[in-house]
Length: 102
Image: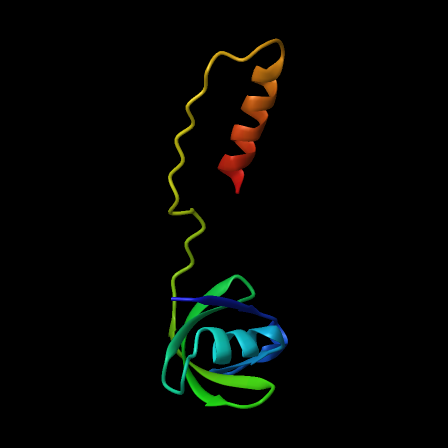
C-alpha cells in the first residue's frame, strides 16, 4: 500500500487532507478512486485512510485505523566483508553502525 507523508496542520479530527504533488500522484499515477485505501504518516504516526473526496487540488481522506508505532525497521541486512586494505576497516565499521541506527 502506498505511503504518503503529511504535516500536522493537514490532520483534522478523523480526516486528513492531502495537498501538493501527492494529489497528482494519487489521482493520475496510482489511479486511486473514492473508497480506496492509502497509508498516511502524520507526525510519526501511521494511519490507514479511505479516500472520501477527490478534488482538483486536494484529496480528503477519513482515518479508518491508527496503526501501532513500530520503531524497529522490518528490514534485515547481512553484510559480507572481504579483507580490507590499510585503514578501511574503520570506515566499514562506522558505516555498518550508521546502517543499524537508521
